[in-house]
Structures are given as structure tokens and as C-alpha cells.
Image 1 (cartoon, rainbow, N blue to C red):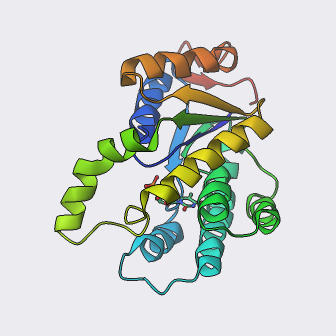
Image 2 (image 1 turned 180 degrees about the vertical axis):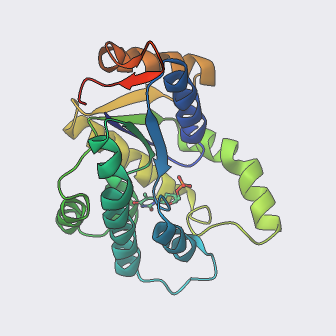
Length: 225
Ligand code: TMP
């Protein structure tokens, strides 16, 4: 099972990924928690390059290719092997993020992005993508303490520096994508309390959770293994 979490800055993805990982552990479901950019050793280097605020000269196309490069490495090195070993993969952002940040946000060609995503993932897409949606004001407000702290120390990243309008385009992009892919992308109300939101995540996953888990003797079982 391959699940991605998506949403604007401050939507609470990382907290939900952690909650889900704990629930999977309790149920004895083997899984890998990973993220983009930065889910591999090379990816961490790419992440630094992408987020470093001193890289003001970075061309939008360079940025797009770097996200694709990170994804190509991550898919082959981490995601596919984990799925083949019968593990669940929980990914904090995946290819949809490129469509909305580089496409809707930066105005890069959506057809090119679609093709790049297809190449980088070799056609491997999450079975379920959970879009934690909230108004930009709420997301940025939540992220503000983190952002202000970073700004004061000069460590605010290139995306945190973007204007409100950019984040609004990103949010709208995600909502558009969800409309276009209603089977795969499920919208969740990220203004809810984290515990309530986690309950909704687990409810959505219930059909996939049934039948998975540990059997006697600490033996891991999976429907796909
Ligand atoms: P994170 O803070 O969720 O780890 O993501 C780092 C930043 O990278 C975030 O501002 C969103 C951005 N991003 C893109 O612009 N395109 C992408 O394809 C991905 C995965 C992330």
C-alpha cells in the first residue's frame, strides 16, 4: 500500500504522518515513512539545494528538474523496494506536489510536468493521496512560529519566503487535482484537531487495513506477500 500526504505549508501533514505510523506500528503493519524531497542520501543533497534561500538565481526549470531527479532516485531506491517487500509506504509529499508547486505556483507547463512525473515515478503512483486542505491564512499562521524563528536566524527556506498569492495558487492547484482524481485523492479538513483528523485518516484506510498485520509469533503478514 502506497499512501502520500499532501497540502500547503502548515497543513499538519508531518503530524498526521507520525500519527499514522504509530497506528500502523500498533497494528503490526510493516511500513516505511519517507518524504520528498530528501528521502534518500542523494535526495537530501538535492533538498538542501532546493530550499537554500541563498539560491535566489535558481531557474524555475532547474527547480522542476531537481524535484524530478529527487523523485527518480527515491522511487527506485526506497519506494519500489519497500512495496516489493510487502511494506506500506507513507510518503510526506509526492508527485502531486510538483504539479501544484511548480505547475500552478510557478507556472511551469503542466503537460511537461505530467511527463516528467511519469518518467520519474516509472508510472508508480500512490493508491491513496490524502490532501490536508486548509485556508492559506490558517496554514501560514500555524507555520508562522516556525517561519518567524527561521526568518530571524536567516534560515527561512525558498518556499516559506513566497508571497500569500503563491500559496493560494498551490492550494487551488491541489483542490483542482483532487477534482480530477476523485478516486485517488481524498480531501480532509485540516482545520480539525489533529486527533480527529487522524481518526478520519484511519477511517479512510479501514478497507486497506482489514486483513493486514501481525500474526502470532511476531510474523509479519501482508495480503500482497
Ligand atoms: P516540506 O516542507 O513539506 O518537506 O517540503 C519542502 C518544500 O518543497 C515545500 O515548500 C514544498 C516544496 N515542494 C515542491 O515545490 N515541489 C515538490 O515536488 C515537492 C515534493 C515539494
